Each structure stands twice: as C-alpha cells, then as structure tokens.
Length: 486
Image 1: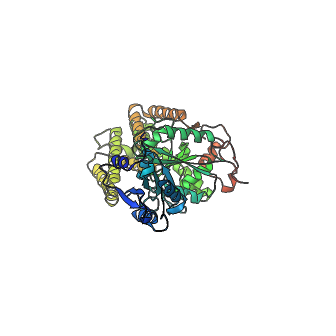
Image 2: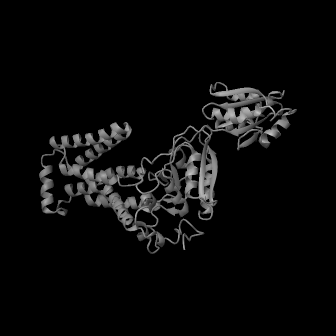
Image 3: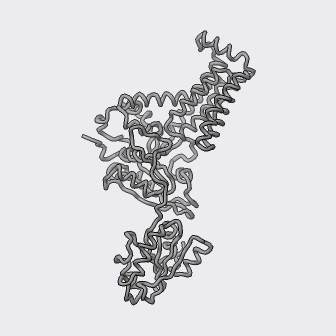
C-alpha cells in the first residue's frame, strides 16, 4: 500500500511512462498565486466534462477569486465551486491513484498535500441491446453491457424498491475491478449475503477479466465441472432471482450477471417461462428435461442396443440397423465416438469463426461430412440421425455451460456402453446421480428440490402453476418474509 502524501512529483512518478496521463497547472480564479494542478487519464474520463465541469469553474473569475490559502480553496471547492456531484478529498497517494484509474479527475493542492477528485467517467460504452444468447419473445429485450453502473440501473428499473441493496467491492490487485453484490434486504438470507461478502473481500488475485476469474472463489466446489452459479445476460432474469431470495453479482467489464445459489433446476429454467401461459410453460419445461435426458443418453443407448442387446429392438428396426451396418467396417461404438467427435469439431469451428461464416461452415460442414460418411460407407444413416438428434436435444438446454458438460458426459456414457452395454450405462448414470447429490451451493443441495421430501416438490419443479398460486417463496432460499402475495 502506498500511503505517501499527495504531491505533484509523487503523482508524476507513479504515472511515469503513461502517455495517456495528463497534468495541467492552473490559476484558481485566474488571479490566485496558490499552486493548483488538474490531472486525469485520457480515455477513462470524458475530456469535455473535465473542461466544462472542472477546469472552467476553477479558473472562472468571481468563483474562486480572492482565495488566499489552499485550505480556503479546498473548502470552497467542496462547497460547490466545481460542478460535479461526486466529490472526494484524498490525502494518500494510493487513494488518489485508484480514483484516477477508475474515471476521476483530480485537483492537487500542492501546499497542503491534498487532492480533490471528481467523477467524470467517459460515457463511451456499448449501448444496451438485445440479448444474443437468451432470446426474448414476449419478455424484455434489454441485455447487460460491460458498464457496471448501466447494469445496476437496468436491475433498478425492474425492482424499484429501497429494499434492493447493492454492496460494491474492489477485487484484483492490478485490475481494481468493481464487483457489486445485489440482494433484497427483507428476503435474502443474511448469512449467505455475509458469507459471499467476506469471500469477495478476502480474494487475493491480480485481476478479474472474465467470469472464470471470479466464480471459483464464490462456489463451494470449485473442482466440479458442473456450473454452480447461474449466468444470465438478461436483467429480468436476475431480478426474478433476487425476488426469489437468491443473491446476484455484477462485475464491471462483464456483460453477464451471476445468481447464487445455483441449482440444476435453476439452470434448466428459461426466462420465457414467466412470460408464457402456465400450461404452455409446463409443457416446454417437460420438453426441456426430456431433451436433457436424450442429449445425455441417446447415443449410449443406441450403442448398447446395437452392440450388446439386439434383442431389445423390434424385429423391423433391428433388420434396418443390421442392413445399414453391414457395409460399415467399424463397430457401432467406434462409429458413434467418431461421429460425436466430428460433431463437436464442427460446432467449435462454427463458434470460433465470424458469425456469418461460422453458421455456413456448421451447416454445410455437417451436410457434407454426413453425406460423405454415408456414401463412403464409413457410418450408417441411423448413427448419423442419432448423433444429430442428441445434438439438437442438447441445444434445448438453456444453460450453455451445462450443455458443454453434457457433451463430455455423453461421450463417456458411449464408452461405458461399448465396454459393458446397459449395465455400464446404468452404473455411469448411478455414479453421476450420486455425485450430483453430494454437491451443495451455500447450503442448498444441487438437485434441490428433487432430493427434498416435501410434498409437491417434484411437481413444482417440472410443472408451472398459475402465477396467482405462488403465494410463498421457497423455504430453502428464504427463512423470512416468505409470503409473495396475498
């Protein structure tokens, strides 16, 4: 920590070799002999605001004219001589440097070794636009951007209550990234809020440049591949989570929000579920869970049936599979693994290329590779259909990170199906369920409410009741103010 007093030379030294740092000497009121300096970092601040709201009032005749001492100048500036709402007095070099790098301009009064900082952050930022991943049909279309204050304002517009609390912490030795914790004061569990706040305050890392830098320090099982915090780019989904008793997290520079505690049912929930009629939303939710099961098990079931358990298949279907597999020189399990790898390679290529080119490569590549594999008798048409169906089912999973985990588990189950058939698949699924039952996030089971003995828990998760029927909040998330409506 640099606790040296504020002087012009010390500020110059700490920002040496920084060509975007500017320091300008001025005369207060144009007639004062008191040395004063204005400094700022170009690009981080708005130069127009620095000129109009800081330098102009300081040098304007009549406003600071006749000032005899730096202490008197400091008093007038703090009383409103400069036209900015945010005013801070800094007597330590460390505090002044932090303000300058975060979008403040500073007036240094050399004789009393004090600086006054004014927030004049640059307004050049990406405008609020439509969500790119979580598409909206009937719900709000606004999405988070990379500017923290814009994101907090988007949440405030949806929860216009003083009970919505925001606690800001600076994380990162070098990056100094602002991270804001959001929660409803009368709904969220105070113990969870305090635990998360302590984790943020005790983080010791160089910088927060992505969600992966922050998330491992907040979750209970950082080595688990399963996401334990729900990510969203939509303010309405974050606001809905806050009203349920969850805790939100917004990070400056990241256009996503985090919701904790994260559970599997929360990851399988889409923002559009609240906008749809309850019967339609229930049907789509069931379809989504069916897609999860198919994406995980369909290739493995086909491999086990074609390799070990032909008696499970109807006679006509078995005859069709045998006929299609006769000319293929590889075993069904080997073909399935090769097709899954090819599918993942095409998907990754489509993601890494520019949007227009990537979509074309994915579609044309899949058609060409699939057609060529069938023509060359390297794969059967049924195997390609199975892989395509599993891939399409995986796209129905709302959480992208969970969908990526399913892709690896799918390949693992195919490997077990090759080795042991249906017993191998059963053992793999049992181990997976057992592992998920061991996960917890802030005292809430990862599979909650599937592992809860409360009546109606399964119904509440898989089906959606009318909005007027949700009179109480979830007891696992909220221990006070459980009533949602009369």
